[in-house]
Image (cartoon, rainbow, N blue to C red; front, side, top):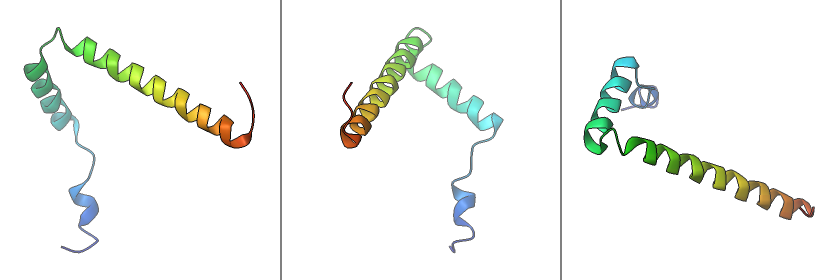
Length: 64
């Protein structure tokens, strides 16, 4: 395998692959659990962004 074929192995999935992945996730977790998972991911992203902005303020010496 050379470096020219490496990007082909990690390309973005197409629409059919995304549908298949979503169906598998739906079957594994169920329709009732998916909103809870999405809410948890959203809260995690929000907390991560807040902590990153806190680090930026600490580095620049600014106070909140």
